[in-house]
Image (cartoon, rainbow, N blue to C red):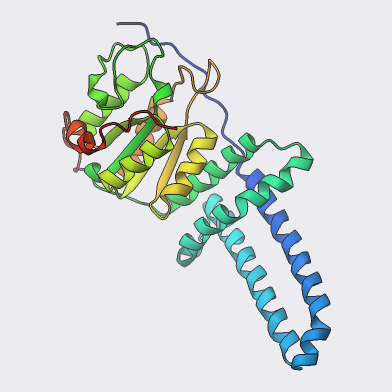
Length: 283
């Protein structure tokens, strides 16, 4: 067995980066809405004296709800009591405002990748604050094929158990963990296959391992299904012989899986992936 190499795990993305940009986006939109109302007010008053107040009230309510959602997120990431009734709205908010946050960050030299990492950090906190617990067999773990050693001849996108667990990459450790704990584990070649896996397995929660871009799009794609992301490690650059912090994955799994529901699941993947024959080559 090959000696396991150690890699430096990247530092945690700063959650306040994404929060600051969506707050800035909200302020900009508030100014735009006020300017729009100011321009429209005389015409609205000409139609009915009460229309400017109603339209202004609607605009103010929209801005207030967004600010309340941001406040809720701030409370959540600081481990303070927050409004649980707004959990769903908080997810919707960060998904809706992300594209605008990217635009706002460009003039300040904030890269999309850094912002995606901040988005994932915020999303993971919201996931954990919901205290989601599911049986092991209702949890899906998906990882990209770049986690497999590039020179490995084994085909694992059909069934990860084809892995010989030689220690050359992290797939073997994840297969072993899946067999011990009983969650579904698949290796996807792209977003289309990953979405098909989610549709086929019908999990109650998803743990995804990928780069910032794929994690962000994946979390948004499976919404409202709760998903938590673990960023991969890229010592050789993107999409080539990547790695993952196995202990970080284990900690996330232990916080999600209901104790006592773990069971051996060896050999289960092939039966589930059978109907997906021919979908291995993906985008």
